[in-house]
Length: 137
Image (cartoon, rainbow, N blue to C red):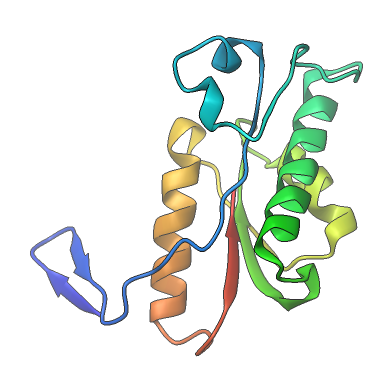
């Protein structure tokens, strides 16, 4: 890994995305990208009483979906970088707790996903594992 300038990193081994999964609410499913989502919910609460419970359920089911699509068992996922719109990462913590994944909580509001990809990539490139399965949500 090489730092170029003040804010650019060049990886010796560029990270690769092997699989993706997405569950979205009604507003996203009404937009032009609807056909690209794995599951579109008609109700953003997905039958739950609070948004936090719904978000936890969305996180849990999205991770289960990407694990199933990838064919990589969750026991082989070494690290999970995740976050949500609550600064304590409550929804992510509750959504991931049954999956028993080593979890790094990230709070960046709307930038959380990109931060997770960046941090996970640097973490792996830095030698955390030679071969690693990483989940970023």
